Length: 296
Image (cartoon, rainbow, N blue to C red; front, side):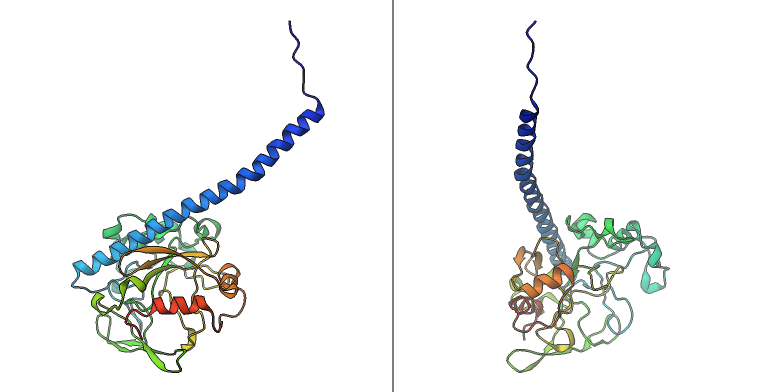
């Protein structure tokens, strides 16, 4: 019988080295492919949310769905897209229904809040509210599921006072813009109040559990910019789910992926580090221009 020659130690080491080299090449490529795939899913989610956002106003006499979930107080918002976490998806928080406390905020209660929101009848899926690269719901105790926040000026929280839950907005926040003028941040409540819908964002990825400790387990409020009336200051900032890029949804129904360029933006996105006051930051300028649906 013919005897099979065994590998020598050197030959085995060579084979192992070749396998190691191949893995070193393939694994990063697979990670890139995975990142691209999850980015595509995230874009599809944003596109779905924006289309349902648009359909809602078509079915409701051009009234915009509320993009914060405050149901009482000076910034109460009607027709809320999602509710805070609930024991049951039929609960009505404005009617005094009991709501979970912090230690109880499990995923099912969070999903109940999504199902109770006004957009769920159009989306029919809890998955479109979540970016696949957002792992907080796995890595944190009772971590948040929702990855997207509504723009603060799209019938959301960025106003000062409203005349009751369903009344007109009475006072708007004031901001000093680069021209030296002080302008009102008008919060629109109807679609026909939006100027240039293709350039005004509705949803943006926001890190609800960012390193600076906002911990918005209740998804309170929306995505708000220009902290303290300062044009060049982040209030909220985009999430680090796509390595320096974010998906944005726009009022005409389309979604796109945006590259953030300023190192200060990238630092605060990734680590929560550095000052949120960043003069002449082109990313802030871009975000602010997409944030004002009624224009300046």
